[in-house]
Structure formats: structure tokens, C-alpha cells
Image (cartoon, rainbow, N blue to C red; front, side):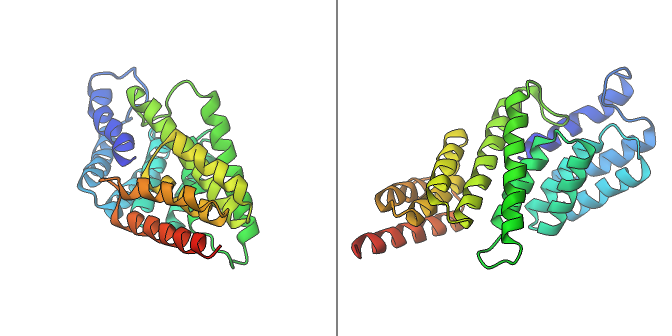
Length: 253
């Protein structure tokens, strides 16, 4: 979702400042423009550390920036992209504090926490509760929303809305699976795939089908992932593992 978040910032900064002074959001000084340009340059280059550093500079030096919510979303997204779980959570929590109706932050936190919680974690029950709260609130916000949040182009909002809906249901499915509520996990993952039929959600669906002893369904779900040309190798590997497990368990009945 990086392009959908970062592109509007690139398009908005100079026109808003130089030509459309009455339009919101807008930079309040040339120095803020220059600081925001460093953010967009880092975002375009794919240098996540530089992007986060540039964002922190803006937030620390331009406390009243109109771009705060957008920048926090970008920082959270960059942290997630580089695999920094702690930083993802930190920026996500800041983003929600700045805007409680931030569905993007809530969906990202729900999914990140779900993916990083393990069976034997001492805080598993607490994390499951966090995932449920973040994900359900995401769905509530999305259901009521009619306009995109700052940083999302209006024509991209339906696509982003579907992605966020899928992320929320994916997180709920993973949480239910951790809680050994397998039928519930299956329904949540089916909703995730229906909202946004991506390889990750489909692979997760294959796993919960295995856990719920629906082996034929697991094989079918895994085959869909394996047939996706755009599915990352690690996701295909996971799907293959679920298919192998389903075939093994089906044969041992």
C-alpha cells in the first residue's frame, strides 16, 4: 500500500504551497516544504530508514504540520516494510492517538500483532484481545466512512478500503486460530479473501482449514496460492506446506 499513501504527498506539497494557499492540507513555510521534499525523496527511493528519519525531522520541527497523520501512516508503513515490528507498533499507536478514526493504523496493528504472536507467548491472550479490538474497530470505521483519509487519493479509496477490510478479517482469523477457535478462524479468513483475494490471506485460509480438519478445502485453497504468478516465494512455500500437511492428515484418517 506504499504507493497509495506516498504518492498524494508527492503531488500535494509544492502545488498546495505555491498555488493553492487556501487548500488543506498545506505546508506553512518554505522550510516545511523542504523537509517534506526529503520525506518524499526517501519514500521514492525505497530507503525506509531515511524515510523514517525524514518523517521524524518534520514531526519534531514542525509540530503543527497539516501532514502529521499522513506522515505517521507513512512511517508505520515504512517500518512494517523493513520488518521492524516494534517500530511499526510505536508509529501505529502514535497514529491512532493523533486520529482515533485512523483505519489504516488500526488494520496494520491488528495484522502485525497477529502475525507476531506465537502459541506459547506469555502475553498471547492480551495480544489476541488487542488484535480483536483493533480489527473490529477498523471494520466499524470503514463501514461508516464515505471519504478517504488524508494521504489516500479518492479514486484509490475503494481499493484501499477493500485491502483494509481484508487485513482486518485476516487478523481476526489469525487471532481465532491462535485461540483454537477454528470454525471462527475459517469464517474470518473466508471474509478476508472475499474482501481482498490476495495470496497471503488465501495461504492463511489454507492453514486454518487444516487446523479445522477440512483437508480438501485446505488443498484447494493452497492450490489457488500456488497458481498465483504474483505470489511471493515464501507465501507459496507456506501454501505448499499446508497442502502437504492436508494430504498427510487426510491419508491418515
